[in-house]
Length: 206
Image (cartoon, rainbow, N blue to C red):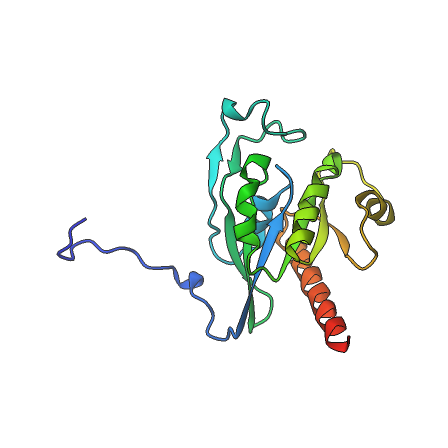
């Protein structure tokens, strides 16, 4: 680069600037097992170009990573995904997608820090992966909702059956979604925000 000024570093795009009406922001984490759709959700709903840290999968993961149901997946998140969405003119959500492979879960603690809430993405073909995910959120005191990403070859179960299988109390919302669709991903985030609001009201009355 010519430091005499002939070349300049491009600044942020106009659409990446934080709206001037913003008065509040919240950090939300999107968690789940490998291949459940976290990167897709951040990408579909973010109003800015999402930051991703995807790397090509190599043979080093064979026998280490559980990629059942995602055998055709060629890249994986190794640090985080990041996006941003306004839910009102005043409130902005910063979205952090966590890496799904268990060998990268040590990064989760830093991503959970300061999070207002979380979305747990679930694949009905691999429900057992969700237990440790939810356990880590509970240990960290991060409230969450569960979003069942509907894969074409995934079995469909009634919500009550899913609640029983995941051993979730009745107050935690469970919703179905298609993370490829912006509207569906946004609905999941709105469900989380309503849940967090109800928790805040309950605590204020206690």
